[in-house]
Amino acid sequence: MIRITVDDQNIAVQENTTLLSACLANDIYIPRQCFVEAGDQAAASCRLCFVEVVGEEYPVTACTVTVSDGMQVRTDTMAVRRLQRAGLRLLLSVHDIDCRNCPANKQCELQNIARFLKVGLKAKPYEVTLKQPAVDTSHRQIDYYPNRCVLCGRCIAVCQNHNTQPFLAFAKRGFDTIISSFGQESESDACLDCQACVATCPVAALALKGQVQL
Image (tube, rainbow, N blue to C red):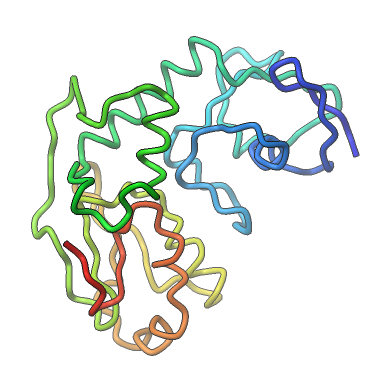
């Protein structure tokens, strides 16, 4: 065990642990979307888990930093909150804000993060850009709602962990990026038995066919 200081709190953590894992294990909340505890490598795609570490010139993503003995960390500085709020507003600019009709309502990590950062769910100052079609039904077992998706990549990571290779992947680029199965048919039976991607999705962007999705 080693000791680090987070927001003036001295805590003992396991060596070779990511800073994000260490904070979460000690009930220190850090906004995040893409983090998967069992993942082999942090995706660092959501750009929400920024912290300041003494000795680093700029804020760093807590999911990519390994703890070291004596490390001093700040999670609630102006620079950290500015980066987190900017990242959240960008996510909201491609998100269909229809919480009342969403299955994830009141259990949604995006809502929790917005509440924590005191950011309204409207995407100001950015214009909202939504994708078409609103529902991708090309997969035989799973429907995909791209305008709920926050592109955290957790579904891809857990799919790979469960099946040794991912049946899902990012497709396209920029604001057009989506999660795709590329029309694969061989994975359908495995997907029905597994359902890990559906379970890990923080915003109900994936659903088994036949589930009620308003």
